Length: 168
Image 1 (cartoon, rainbow, N blue to C red):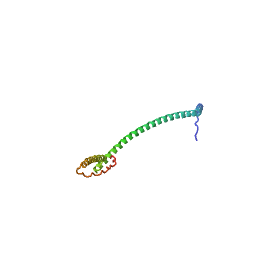
Image 2 (image 1 turned 90 degrees about the horizontal axis):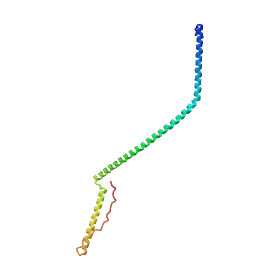
Image 3 (image 1 turned 180 degrees about the vertical axis):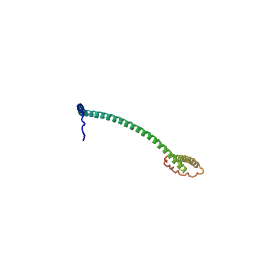
């Protein structure tokens, strides 16, 4: 058990004053805290509403900036896609040309005539047919003049043209 120390009389009065001052100070602190709490409650809803308004404004600004960035990125992606498409198209053209060259060389090695060769051959055959016709008409009038008849000309066979081969 705790024993109280007894102090002389005038000190007792001084201790009582000190205790009263501490009690009054604690009472004032308590009342100030209650006042602050009441004020915070009253102004808290105002502050909350102000914060909601500021948050809404900030959200709108953020959305506008985000939409601008998305639009900018979208246009960049579109231009990049166009560039890639152009490059890919050029590569396909090169690949096609390489393929055609190789096929042409392979067919040439196998002695397969090209469309150009067939056209030249057809032109030559037509020229020869005209020359034969010209020679056969020159020999006919000589037979009428009483000379020894020339051999009968061969009946003309129709020239069969092949369909033009696709360019290889």
